[in-house]
Each structure stands twice: as structure tokens, then as C-alpha cells.
Image 1 (tube, one colour):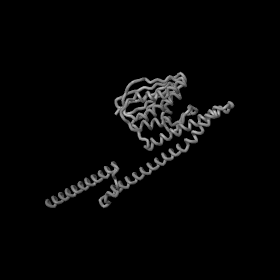
Image 2 (image 1 turned 90 degrees about the vertical axis):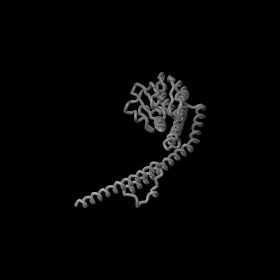
Image 3 (image 1 turned 45 degrees about the vertical axis):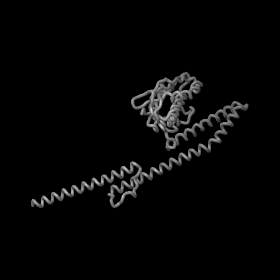
Image 4 (image 1 turned 135 degrees about the vertical axis):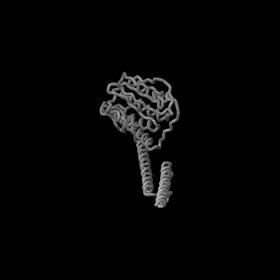
Length: 297
């Protein structure tokens, strides 16, 4: 009995060692598949089905279906971008003609009603142009056709350029626009960050009443730095603060104000595309403070 027990124990130990070795080989095989999938090198044909367990086979099918879905999404994105680009090209000439004719009409002697119609025509044509431009930019950012290239740089020059662009608009509305000059370095795409900052300034000046203030400042933290645009406008209720970053979202109380409701959506896209984010602090009657955060390194 003792000899038989010893043989049984050795047999069990051998089976246990074989199973552990088999499981180890299986795990190593799965790790190789996962590494290939993460690196984009996975091909189902690279693996002999005779050596695959049921789990491996299902993983292969899952990875293959995921790859197919990604290709389909990419194709749809490219089609959407091509459609938006085509619409942009096809509408630019007739839109330019409408703007030209509305300018010519404005120079003619018109009745009061005719002059008002001409003014509205020009305003709607300009609004349509802004919408088309914003849609093209957004589409290309979303599809990755326009990639951002963040590099280390000084934040102050970007802020000064944006403030200079909106100085006349602020003066026409009698809004006091200032840049609280300071220094700070971060990692960002200068062109697109300036675009985002201009959108924030456009909103701030648009909703700040005559005699109000809009201030641009820089804040530097350990991991992030922020371009801050603060205004003395009507403020935004907490319940509405998340909504205003959605595409084409406009608050009911501002429905008659100029704009197409895509500027803040574009700001958020630009921020996230370079590893940053946007934060809003506001309350009704207390103005708004938008902070565009970008990484420091």
C-alpha cells in the first residue's frame, strides 16, 4: 500500500506540474495575443486554431470584430468630414455673392423697411458664414484631420494676440477689456489655443453689458496652467453650466444674441485634444469665469 500510495502521489504531482505548465503556456500565449492587439500587430491568421483554446478563439473573434468596428467608424468619420468640406466649398461662392449684393443694396437709397431688410440679410449671411467655418473646424478636429501639435511655449503672447483681436469689438460695445499681464509656460498648440481663447473672449464681450469689464489673466499651477477669461455679465445658473458646452446649445434667455451655439463646444474640443480641460465658475448676477487649462509638461 505504501508503494502504491507513493506512486499515486507522484502521479498526482506530475499531473499537477503538467497542468501548471500548460496553464503557463496558455497564459503566455494569451499575453502574446494581447500584446499584439495593443501594438496593432494582431492578425487572426497568425495563430493556429489547433493550438487555441475556446477562450483564445473567442478573443480572436472579439479583436477582429473590434478592428472591423474601428475601421467602419473611421470610414464614417472620413465621409462626414468630406461631406462638411464639400458643403463648405459649395456654399462659399453663393454666400460671398449674397454678402456682396447686400453691401451694394445698403449703398442704394432705400425705404426704412428696405434698409432694415438689407441689414437683416447681411447679418444672417455673416451668421451662416460663421456657422460653416465653425462646422468645418469642429469636423476636422473630431476626425483627427486637423491634429493639434502642443509644444512648450510662453502663454502671455497667445493671450496678448487674442486680446488685440477683440480690442475693437470691446471698445465698440464700451466694455473695458484688459490683460492682467503675467508670465507662464505650458505645453499647448499656440494657434488652436488662441482660437479657443478668442471664442471665450467673443462670448464674454457679447454677454457683458456696456460699462462692464472683461479680464484675461494667466494662472500657473504645478501640473497645469490656465488662460482665464472673467466677465461682469449676467452669469450662468449652475443647472445650465454643463449644457452650454454642447454643440448648438444656447440658453433661452440668450436666443436672440448673435452666434450659432458652437463656440464653447469648440473650446472644449481644443482643450481635450491637447490634454487639457475647461472649467466654469459662475452664478446669476455675478458674471462668469472660464478657465482653459493646458498641461505644463
